[in-house]
Image: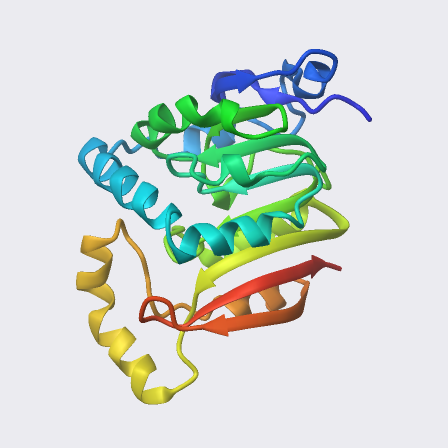
Length: 242
């Protein structure tokens, strides 16, 4: 398998394993143009990152951690984790992954995530960047992981289009997201609380039509588990890149 190349200026940390470290060769990716770097906002929120890290660690001990672990058993090959946060997912990436690339826009989050790179079985790298403009070539990855992140991206349509682009045909998008309620009364409540909810939860939009956006980008949704943890409607499952 050819070595995966990462844009040097954006690589924050790399963990390699002997004999498989070549999978994470640093270099200049063909599509990592200077324009992408200029367009990326480097926003650091150290207080939010610290608070988020505490909540994430607690959540990992409960249902979210169990669900994330079950979802990531399906990850294989070259894996991209978007919105990696403080790296709580790294320990769940199985040995079927040949490499893990974790993308996160917030430097404060990345500093915490760097300490978790050794938690998983696959060689791993952290990259600072935004999901709306991924600095990777087309059809680079076999698996993309999106856990509780599509609600916070700046542009949902651009993000899912980029995920479709960087996945190989037949590649899988592993989802664990909260979505807009199918019940209209609850959906209207989501609309009402969207702004204050976002202030408290790092720009989260609780009312996004995430599944519709994924299908519009060219994914085929597989069977999805729907559940209400803790309050908002959630979905978990796989979408296939067609």
